[in-house]
Every structure is written in C-alpha cells, then in structure tokens.
Length: 69
Image (spheres, rainbow, N blue to C red):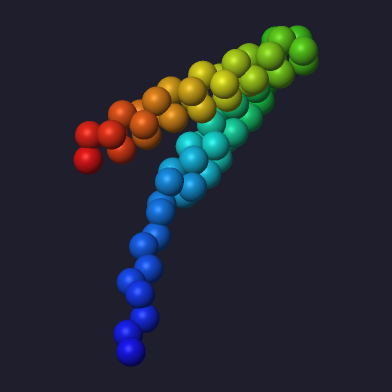
C-alpha cells in the first residue's frame, strides 16, 4: 500500500511574507517620519498609509504572478 501523494499549498506563505514586509515598511516609514520631525500622529498615519499601500500592492503582485504560472 502506498500513501496518497500530499500536495502543499504555499499561498499562505505568500500572504505571510507580504504582510510581514508591509509591516516592516510601515514601521520604518513611521519611525523615519518621526525622526525627521513630524508630529507623532502624522508619523503614525504615514506609517499606516505605507503599510496599507505596500500590502495592497504586494497582494496584487502575488495574485498576478500566481495567475500567470
């Protein structure tokens, strides 16, 4: 008897990598904005905007690449 071949779906890893990359980018932008003298709320808003943009763009790239494989 042989065991059925298992298939591994790596989509979750793509989402995790994009999420972590966007978090690091947002944090870096927020800290950089605060270090350059922006008000704290504005720096947090800049970091959040960078996080949202990076996550959206990254997921669009992942979707595009996975469809064309």
